[in-house]
Image (tube, rainbow, N blue to C red; front, top):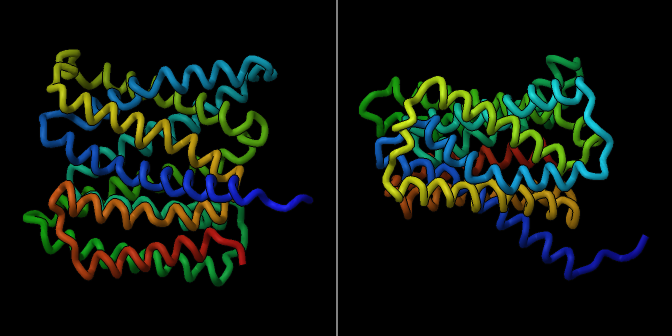
Length: 299
């Protein structure tokens, strides 16, 4: 094997860092958009519609020379797309109506430990000691951050509701990750991601059509601006930057760099949203990130 290219390695590190920042900004854009009277499903529909042309092109381009999909492929794609991108996203958007962006990002970062628990419960895989330690660290960290939000809230049940919705989002995404491995190996990451996004867009638009009047799309230009920013900087660019980073520096190093995400969300929430920055949050973030690293990285 040849020596790794230092320039490619540095570029991969930069891509992983930018992808983490992009993902961390999603909660900020959502919270900013909620300053106007827009529902969670309408905001998600705007995000998905504005992302649709790019993922449609990628799906078409990556499928030109590929074998056709079987009926089973479409059924699996439908299930994973509705779970991983539609289901996880709508629960996340709903939860952000009730909790801070910082707490939302920390709860979402439980998905690596939830993926481990799913493997243990469903596939009967033994639970390793370091995985158990990671789970305990992550949930202790969420407890610290949750206590901070609960102290600030006028109505405690709203924080419980928001945290429950976002935890549901993390669980749904963990289910998606658990089932996506064989499909990615079969279809390739670009084709699989693009097709899942198309399924998710269809699910989102169906939800919008069944629950909202068409007049719900009559919104201030600022909401569409934030939706466009979310589509470009928190959906399209980070998805492809993360894939490119993994090709250059590997999944483990990408995970390591990606742990900057919750810290970035806490900082942006303080800077742009006026959310408080407390010792509880910092301790909670540190514990969650330690748990993520412990379960994600190789020995």
